[in-house]
Length: 215
Image (cartoon, rainbow, N blue to C red; front, side, top):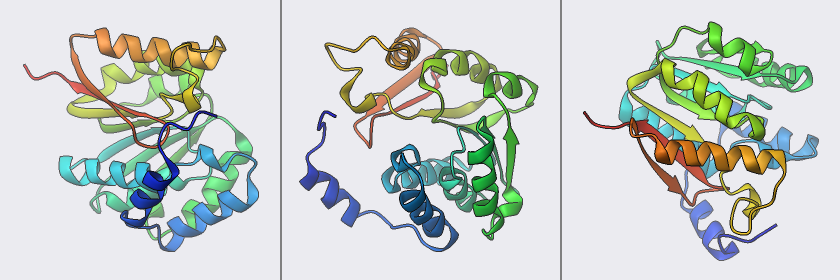
């Protein structure tokens, strides 16, 4: 693993970011204690950035690709207005079962719809338009997710994609595994798409934000 941000900077940022509480904290703690890869869940900085984007934009319909244990969905649901809705897609049935338990324990459970199945198959049937799209799923499929998401993005919507650094694997000299190639292609296509503006943030493992370019 490549240390992209110093531990001191990460600790300082964590100390100055609103921590998780309630059902969200419980889901996060369960994930850290009971899963082999707790880093797959949305961390506090990522979750609070998503919250800020939802609040600032007035988003009402959110799409998440990759539920995992439900932490991201819970964080975003809490930021939505009472009539807001999160649609979250999860391929792994075990993860989906865990996420459903965490969602059921939340006061915002009625704002979350979990759809089990491959996002490449389930996403085309969703109507949209989505105000915020959070992508944190199978890395090799990121370019395909982009194809499916763009037609369903609201005119003032935003895409937020996680793991653009892949612990340094995408940085020169990049590795050649399928996941890294998918991430590099995803980043290249967004950068080259004149319909979009974008910014890659050094938050967590690299967050890429993309939104329709002003007309």
